[in-house]
Image (cartoon, rainbow, N blue to C red):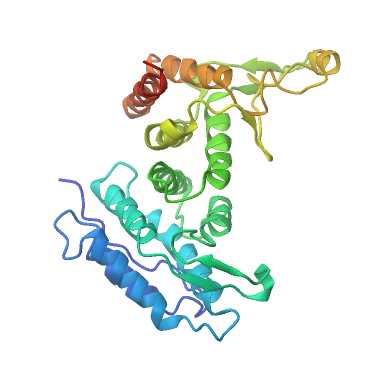
Length: 304
């Protein structure tokens, strides 16, 4: 039997997240399948916690709570195994928060003032998640860091697939992961130009599983997109050679973002990884699940 997920506060936030014990208590009573709280009840309890700490008269009241609330949630998500029932329960809790009756809150001057919908717009989810991607002070060693990164990515992918966060933000996170996992690497060659390494056995397993999570949980929202994405990156299998860049006056083989041709490249790479016996069975399995999810998305969007 898999171990029970018991969330804990891993490090000191310097007093900023004074409400952390309450959040952890609510989630620990929710994440087990037979937990005392359902995701809907947990969302109501978290909403009530916000209400206790929000004052419409204080300019920074909403941002002071919501910034640290989301920073805490992202950190806690690293403790939840990416393929566990608890990961699904956490995502459903976010969905229940998002679906609460709309409530406008005032943001402080440092964020331009104005108002946002407290849970519908999920203010500060994006910038705090971006920070979480870059730093994990709770990781014990390199293997732990990789596993926690995968858990974090799966958490965001599930939220994206459920429509909890806006596509303008999360599609870039998905793109970065798919690029790093699937678009090859460069192998240095002494005395000659570097060579593109497209060997599927050379991939990083945790990155493949992270990329697969974005496809499995949010691929239906990625398929069919054909647009440039500001901040996009590209691996060597999608970048043009220097000569081609000069000739064609562009850097990539297709759209510098999402397009059907790039989707097909990712699908082909997942298929090769799935069939590569040199890789661990769980990596191959996740790659196979990604191929299945891509085929399902294609079928779903095909006109009848």
